[in-house]
Each structure stands twice: as structure tokens, then as C-alpha cells.
Amino acid sequence: MNKKENLKASVIECCVNGTMTIKVAADRLGFSERYVKKLKARYKKLGASSMLHGNCGRQPKHAIDAEIKSKIIEIWKQPDFEECNFKHFQEFLEEDYNIIISYSALYNLLHKKGYKSPRKHKKIKVHNRRKERSSEGELLQVDGTPHQFFYGDDKMYCLHGFIDDATHKVTGLYLSENECMHGYLEVTRQTLKNFGMPLALYADGSSIFFPKDKELTIEEQLAGLTKPTTQYGRMMDELNIKLIHAGSSQAKGRVERLWNTLHDRLRTEFRINKITTLEEANEFLIKYIPKFNKKFAIEAENKQSSFMKLPKYVNIDYLLSVKYNRTVDVSNCISISGTTFLIETKEILHKKKVEICISKRIGMKVRFNEKWYKITPISTQNKKSLKSNESIEGIIQEFIYFNCLKNERLSA
Image (cartoon, rainbow, N blue to C red):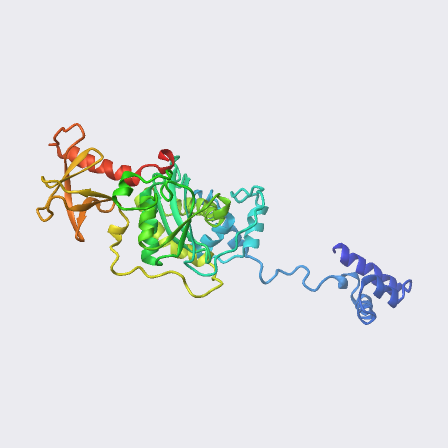
């Protein structure tokens, strides 16, 4: 018997012995007099054991079978789950092992066995949250996060991502060696193709998004711009997507909290799925985004979406490329950063203006009258002619690296 049942038995025994009235017993136990009379009659017939609850000693119907408990512990002890938090582990049990268990039951089971969830919850300062936008596509928060995503690999890789402010939907994820233009271009590509064009992007002060200098560069003057911009800013201007500068990490707390979740989950997901390379990771992320959104997304206050479908006339490879304007000389060549390139066509007359387009996807090409043309480097700044195929390809890769793949944080 527990304390409550012992007290009840003692009071009813006093009633049976005549040392306490029914009314006093009812007041002491908080029962009605009618119920106390029933307890008194039961006590006379069955004794003190009749004061036990009817379910005493019975196995609850919702109790977890001992065999299931043992299996859960066995699964938890697998090396793949050593960095997995309890909530994520609960999802794996349901999806991969067909074991359905509530979080509280799982927590109690693992906690009683001495296991702790690896997530560390630190005390943080409380900040007033900015009110969420009312409709999907009205504002996307943009950021990149470095982390050791691969088990057994101490190298830090950067995950680039967009998240919708109203619905908390992730619209794009891309993993690369460092925070770079290419990473953000790939996330932008995913967003434009799978969701559409948002009204605005909310990003930090990275030089990818906002110019460091307030004066126009020569390139910008030649392009006819009236205010400084970045290559990425120019791309968003073409789609009339507004870039908003976030003054602090707290200002874009939605995407910062997303990183906390993905740091835990992706490392475990990659480990379980035997993913060890960037190529494998990025293929996995494309399929993982819908699964993540199904679990964590919410409904927007306004059901009408602010996303606009990407117009058919937009060439996405052309849009998402770094561009430089140049004039063709009499020898059908152009020059950029001290390197002379030959345009491999006779369709473009000299003194015509062309665009040099650079990205990891298309390489380095010239665009004129909506047509692409291959270009080949023929000499460098010191006027030395190029003959080796390796040096030719190396120069093109250097341009791609400098414009798209260099570590933005180190070069800023």
C-alpha cells in the first residue's frame, strides 16, 4: 500500500471500530458520506486489502512490452546512433524499425538506463522575436554554417541554406568546402525551380550580397550602374527580388535555429546512409528537404503564396553566372584580369560588346545575342603565349575558383 491507501485503511478501520463517525471520516478523506459507508462495508467483508486500487498489480494496457524495450536499447547502442538526440532517434524507430513509442516514454526508458541526449542546452539571452511574415515567399532568410558534417572527418564544410520566414520551409540546401558564391547560387537555383521567386531575401553583411565599397567600380561604371552592387545583387535585381541587410545573427534567428537542428540531424543521417562525400551529400539533401519540411513546416497566416513562378524566358544558367562586359578587338579577342581570350567564332564583329559568363556549371563562356560561345586563353599578363592544354584549362579553373568557389569569409 502507498501512503494514501494506508491512510484510507486507517480511517475506515476507525469507523468500523466505532472510534470515528462517518461524517468525520468523510471530511478527513475528502469523500462523500455515502462513499465512506461503501468503504466501511467493503472493509468489514474483505479487510484492509479492500482499500487497494482495483488496478493494483495489473500491467497497464499501454505499457511497453519488455521485448520491445530490450530491442530499443539494442538499437540505441548501435554506433550510428551515438550522436543522435532522443527526438531524432524516435523518428528512426518509427520509420526504419516500425516501433511507435511516445517521446516521453522513450525519454524515460533511455534516461532510466543512464543515457543522455547529446544535445546540450545552454542558457541564452532572451531576445524579442520579430513577427513572422504573413505569407509564404514574402521573405526568405539566407545564411551559411560551417560544421563537421561527416563522421570521422574533422574537416569543416559549409552548409548554405534558405528558409521561409512565414512557414519555416527550407527551400534549398547545398554543402561545399567553404562559404562561397557557388553555394548560394545552387541554393538560389533550387529555390527558383522548386518554389519560385520570393519577394525578398534577408541576409547578413557578406560581400557576396552587399558591396564593401560605396563607390562604383570600373566594371559597374562600364555596365551603366548608378549605385554599387555585387554580382549576386545584380542577379536579384534582374528578378526584382529585394535584398535586405540583417544587422545581427539574432535578426535572422529562424535560419540560426535551423542550423542547430541540422547540425545534429545531418551528421547522423549522413553516417547511417554511409554518405562521405560532398557529391553524395548534395544528392541526399535534395531528397531530404521535403522530408524535413513535412515534419517542421507550419501554415502561414495568409494562405495565398507570395512566390512567383520563374518566367519561361529566364535562362537560369545565364542568370546565375558571374558576368563581365568586354569589347571584342580586331583579332576577335577579349581581355579580363590580364589574360587574353580568343572567342571561337567568326560571327561576332570587332568593337561589339559581349558578356563573359562564369559559373561552376557552365565554366567560362561568352554570350552574345542570346548565344553561347566557347573562349580559350591564348596569353597571360606577361604576354607569354599558351601552348599546353593543362595551362589553358588551369587558367579557366582559376577564374572559376576566384569568382565562384573561393572562401568568402577569408577573402572578405
